[in-house]
Amino acid sequence: MRQIRPHVMILWLWCAFWATGCAPLVVGGGAAGGYAVATDERSAGRQMDDATITTKITAEMVQDATVKARDVDVNTVDGTVYLIGLVDSAKERERAEAIARTVSGVRGVVNQLELGSRGVGQALDDKNLGVRIKSKLIGEPGIRSLSVDVDVYRGVVFLTGMVENAGQKEKVLGLARSTHGTTRTVDNLLVHGR
Image (tube, rainbow, N blue to C red; front, side, top):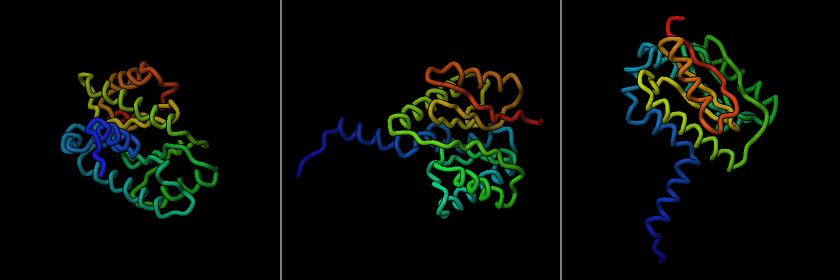
């Protein structure tokens, strides 16, 4: 039996890690989940409600024959659901929104799904751009980086979450805009108390 060299195994694991979408969990959550609850502007109860809504919508999409759930990011902030990603048809876009609207507790749906696709190279570029932006947010004093979700599709950066004040919001937007590879930013950031 042929033995795999350690550097080949590391490269393979790195590619699998990024291709499966695990990186945002490690960078933005994972073991830091408790910290996220403590630093998010929403109450712990509201965060749980939002997480439950997101989970229910995602589960419904996985079961649906029309929606390709792997291409749709679902984010919920204060009961408002943000649908972000790329879909093949207007029918798929409409179906994803219809599914989101049926889940109990949803206050509104912002459908930002766009028609189109991306190749493996573009998907990797998007992942890398997202990680670079998230890293900037983590390193920025006064920014609660775990309260901001970063999704990237074809160079368009979607920032979703809650921040403490307008100054923080502008700082987050500025960091994303100044990161090489960003073609446009979409502001889904809510200011706490507004």
